[in-house]
Image (cartoon, rainbow, N blue to C red; front, side, top):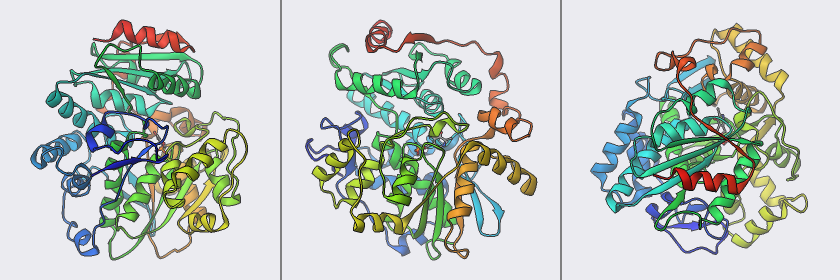
Length: 463
Ligand SMILES: *Cc1c(COP(=O)(O)O)cnc(C)c1O
């Protein structure tokens, strides 16, 4: 499998090369040159497979022999072993034909475990085999950090540096990162917001001179292709549980960086019958404004009760634009870089095409709390604020009652106690493996919002 950049000016890569990097050198994101497409018969034949066996079928073509199949199978099995539900990604019914896909049964209680448990093991295998060392550098608004640390902490060839905005993540989220032991684990609380963290990470990737020779940075946010790849699987899994592929299904996806929903788009391109994909956003609504009004323009970053979606510009949207613009890389670059100067618009034809598949809704904090309270009252099921936004958008945007509508439940409500309490409910107890989280010892450095402070810290702490 060959991977190309959405900006068209980087050399073609193989899987290992895209795994071990971040953005392409031209500033674009890597995508497969061609997607595997599965027939309806083949998808139907996967109906009885366990989650890891299904994952192998879907992931194998993207790796295409670069990792031997038996090794890949073992890596995938191990990635999902620690999930607390036997189905790995169980479905729960809310109402007739209305479903929630619970993606928080992994070690850090958010869907990011699906990708990062696998990514950590893939990196470990490739680095061992090639006798290479790397530094993982990532910014987190909360959930990516702990999932990345959990996924990579056992890899002796990786030093991990995770930046979070100082005092801007919830206590549970912070402690999930800062209580992880290990000499290779380094948490940095940056005096700034999430965008500042991202800016510094981007700058460090752009100039890696500060690293010792033969060391490179690896990205763990969803610009890393391997993360997207892992997330395609649960769209197939959910569909197969609800009568797919014979029967189409729709998904509503709480969206920040557009990684999760882009994986749903890819599942559809690969042959899975998906009727609708709903982009569910909080007040950071650039994608909603594009889908509803054909206006793609920067707004002010707002802090909401769903902090994992407090993102101004969704980086993975570029991967979708690449297809929407019929893979015209120059057009992609123009549209994406133009955003910094002035609002952008799609052509009528492109906008219509986007709206045939995607619908969207922006949900404010008050409505988010109302939905949490309402779902609890009517079903006894407690959802987190990101999931609540998904459920609201699913209900508002749904076109066909006869098509099952599945909202992705992206995090466990215990991670977002303030939203649950604002909804007038008691925050739930921590699950057994995290029961003593509030007593564990924390370790993190507080650094100024300054690239040099961060790179010097990294130099001092590389193993
Ligand atoms: C990361 C995250 C999201 C957003 O996912 P994207 O892939 O960035 O769109 C939504 N909900 C939760 C709980 C998250 O952690």
